[in-house]
Image 1: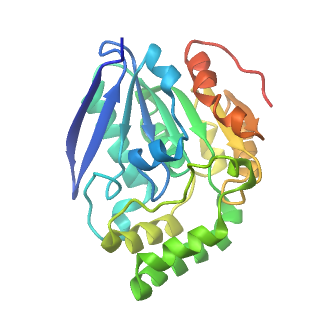
Image 2: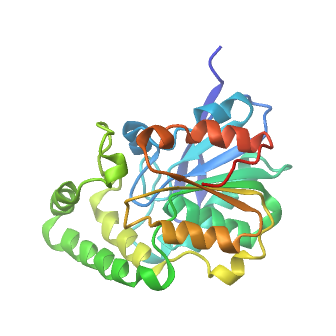
Amino acid sequence: MAPASDAGRLARPHATLAYSTTGPRRGPLAVHAHGALSSRAHERRAGLFDWTAVTATHRLARYDARGHGESTGRAVPADYHYPVLADDLLALCDHLSPDAPVTGFGASMGTATVLWAALARPERFDRLVLAVPAVAWAAREPRRSGLRAAATLVERRGRGALDAAAKLSGPPAVLARAPQYTTEFDLAEPLLPAALRAAAASDLPAPEALRALPHPTLLLAWDTDPLHPLTTARTLAAYLPNARLHVADTLADIRSWDRLAAGFLAGERPAPR
């Protein structure tokens, strides 16, 4: 029997979030936050961050961040700063699981969203599964200028110029054998510059602040990706007091992450890699 599936919308200040849930309706909740400029649909097309194995025991909610995918938003950079996205995540958790903590899943920008949310309200989460954290802290400075330049490019030449630049750069080597993977920007063109400038202004929480998070945490990283370097994941593993890091260097390993996450939610302690 296929897992039960539901969809809905949640009103937020200056945005409406589109979400869907899959899995047992009475199961504990896990919520997945996607990466910057992505969406639920893009992740499905790319074949990444599936988490299907998790739905055997958990109700999995996936949602489009404000302005992304089917969610609405406005062209104001401050609306897309990571702490604002964290507030959206917490509101969705309160809406879908008002009486019980949830497991926070995140990928790239979604990892930042989950960490900011867990710092704001640690009691709202029981475990964290954090995939491919993006370049952060001092190492993020060159990335900031690139994101601001991308925003200006869209304003001057349209989103087609940004699409062309993404195709030229291509995926990291670890994803080279994923034929369905493509870089996409799943926001309306008028919102793209605001989201890009917000990403330039945002960052992960300071490492020292992360010592306050007691949650069992599974960190999932891949190699050969300068935008999501292993140094960020290793720093998180060093500062989060109850974290284990798993590093994938093959596509097959990445595709095993949903089973690894399901085991982690069942209480298994994966060996670090």
